Every structure is written in C-alpha cells, then in structure tokens.
Image 1 (cartoon, rainbow, N blue to C red):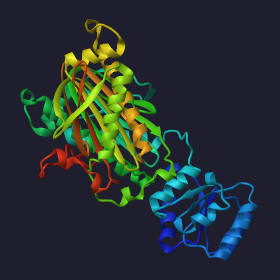
Image 2: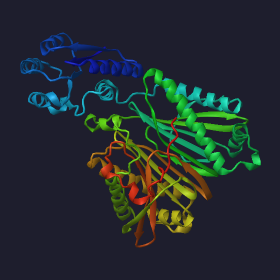
Image 3: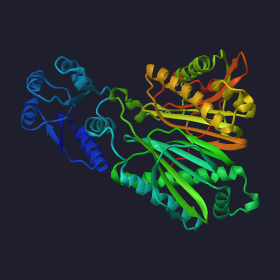
Image 4: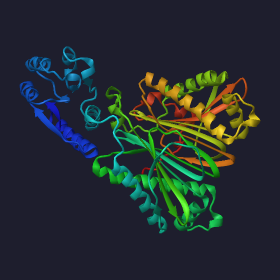
Length: 485
C-alpha cells in the first residue's frame, strides 16, 4: 500500500484529493491511503510512522508550523514529492530541493491532484488494461449489431506491428486522457460499408456515394468511441476524442505511425472483413506544464497566432533541411471543410494540456511524385505508391516534430498521438472532423508551390492571440467541429 499526506487541506481540497485517489485506484487497481494533517506537528508524527511518496500542502502554513515542517523533513531518509500552491512555495524552496517540489500555480484542483498521484505512484510502463480491450470488443459488436441488425463474429485478438495495408474504406479516431492515448482504426470493404448504408440509411446500394460511406463510417467510429468512453468511466477513465479521419478509395494504401503498441481485432460480417486496430500508449506530463486555465476555460476554437508562426517556421526550416528547398510564406486562407479528393494524404496529430494540433497534407499525383522523388533522390518515373506514402509521410513527420519543439519553447507542450499516410493510384475521398480552426498555409518555393493545412484547438489561449477573424468572414463557422462521442 502507498501513502499520501494532505497538510492543512480545506474542505474542497479534501474532497478533490479523495476523488482523485479513488479514480487512480479504479484505473490502476492499487491500494492508497490518504492521511490528513491539520498542523505540521501532526504531519511530523505521520512522517515518523510511515513512508510517504506524495505530500500536498494546501493552505498557508504559520511560521511556527513551517519551522516544524523544516525539521521533520530534514530527518526523512526517503524524501517525498511535495506539492504546494503559491502561498507556501517561497518558504518551502528554502529546504526542499527543486526535484522534490512541485508548484501548483493555480491551486490544487482535482485534475492536478490526480496528475500528481499518477506521476508519483503510477507505473511509467503500465501494460494494457484488459478492461480497455474488452470494452472495445463489446462496443464494436454492440454498435454494429444495434444499427444494422447484422451478426458480427470476432476472431482472435493479436498484438501486431504497424505495417502498410491495402484497404477500401478506413476510419481512424484518436483519443487521449488519464495517462493513455491511442487510436481506434476501422477498415472494411466497400461492399460491407454499402450494406451498412442500406441498413442504416435505407439507401439503395446503387445510390450510395463515397461521401455517404465516409459519413457513415465516421458516425460508426463516433458511436464506438462514445460507448467505450461511457463503459470505462465506471473505472475512472476520462478519455477525450481528439481526431476523426475517414478515407475512401478501393485498395488504397494505409500506413499508421501512431505511438505505442498495436492490437488487431478482426471481425467477419456478411462474409466480409471488418477489421479493428487499436493502438495504445502511455504518457506522463511534466506537472509544471499543466495549465489549469485549459480546464476552466470556455474559450474554444481559438487560432493562436503564436502557434501559426511556429508551424510556418517549421515548414520553412524543414523544406530547407530535408529537401534543400527555399520557401517563402505567402498569405493564408481559412479551410472551411475537410471533405475532398486527393491522391495522397498525410495527417499528423498531437495533444497537450493546452490544446491539440493537426497537420494535413494532401496532394495530387504530380505534387506527390515530385516531393517523394526529392525526398528519395530518385527519378519521378520510378516512384511508386508505397514510396509516396512513406517519404511524404516522413516529410510531414519532420515538420510536425519541428513544430512541437518550437511550440514547447513558448509554453505549448504537445505529445505526438497519431500519424497516418494514405495513397492510391487514382483519387482518394477523405473527410476529417475535428474541433478547432484551420488555415491552409501556402508557400512559394524556388521549384513549385507547397501547401498544407494546419489546425489548432487551443483552449488556454487568450483572445488577443486569436487571428482567425483576420482570415475569415465574421460569421464564419469553425472549420470542422468534432461530433462529441
């Protein structure tokens, strides 16, 4: 059993601490005791009787209490992680090393307390919770059979490695929260998704379009993730959908570069393949990076000019370093929808405590072959679809990495969550639905134009940094609003 101590906690903080620990024990199936000390003398008594890995100090400590705490802390062989609001921080810094002291600049909220507990007591290499896989399995079967009345037969679940695959219809949703992040991908045949359209939309097979298939698979993904989130809430998980992407095109190539491990969950429906792939990774935030304003803010869908500038600089620098192409940024335009045709599509997505970002690069054949040839130092005539998916995807990967480095330097730490590359000899139809505002970043180069779409949902930004209104009409809507799962 692990032990946590709360010193001079107010009524609200006590409740937050109890709820955060209850949530942690539900997710990690661990045993934790929470002790409450009203004074430093009482805390010193607790310290002498049991080891603590984590100590929270809430309200201002009187000088005499601080003196007692200083003496008691100095006698400890195993130093706990001490978390304190600004009221006591200066005095605590005098005797607690920086590596053992965590400031809580916005106070001890439930979310911040939970993050501290998870950081101090949670395993960094936590294995996949079997309840998550079970929830995915049940949710997929429930959503499909309820909506279509068709039986869905599961096959063996296997841990697999990421690999390029040929698909007709692909759908991916990314999620993040409570120390885990990942994606749920669905791939199936055009025939089966058309059958679903007949059942769910009461449409004739001959009238089912690519756009209808994309809409339908997006809705199926949305319902599946919603069912998973609802079921896992009973254990304490709070998962947030962050990215939805659907791609349609017979036998298109799909390559995923999501973080973490992959699990293949194949199903059979109407003698057609319906494959679900689940990628899973764990993460830990630097606690000093957490911005409580993001939790409390209702100011969504801000296009922060600082992040736009980071993206522009990342593109220019990456084109120069990777391709020796000199680029100059030219005026941008807002993106009002993501329901388009292309030959190759490359999407990179990341999440942080202050919002999330998305890069989207879609090219027709001449552009895709040109930039792939530049990346691989090969003639364009020798460039195949697999080379386009791999090399152009790597170009976007480098741009996104450069962006994350620049964003973190200005106080916006992001984690890479999802990267997907799609290519086909012929057109792809795709649809992306995410929260936030998007700009098409355009560049003039010494060879040919270069453009990609960059989007941000920055909950912690201030209105003074919002520049979307400079590019769009006053009554413009967000580029794409994710449907809440």
